[in-house]
Length: 162
Figure 1 (cartoon, rainbow, N blue to C red):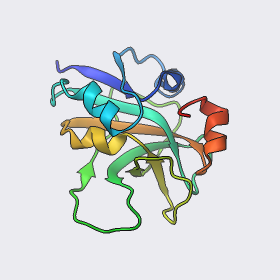
Figure 2: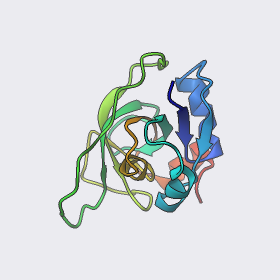
Figure 3: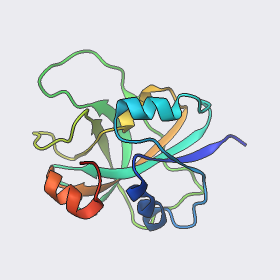
Figure 4: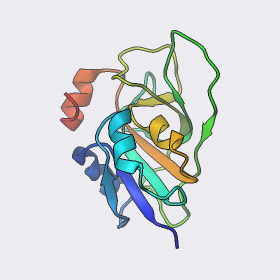
């Protein structure tokens, strides 16, 4: 059996595991926020491992508390266009079940907190595109909408990144 890991950016996201994946006892890797932390934390994990990234994300129009199962991830760069590969994610493994039915949507990863966007029906985070770019063959992501592009609302809910 291949190695299996839950991936979170910050310790405060551990509560999302119990909330959305009750009974899951996979080992947890805490990467830290952002690209450099993700690369350093995951660089030695076998690419055949099964990873589920679970964490907080913003959205311009999904309600706070919505669970998003990510179908594909892209970088958020609204001011320029350049060719990039499409990074498609897998569905949640059959032996894991969420507490609520998630919305399936795209996630955009950014190097900073997204405070405004014309993109709708998507989530915004700061790690997933970098995890996917490392080439893991079995990657799934669940994002819990923490805010509607409000750093203040994010802090109130998560006590996360300063």
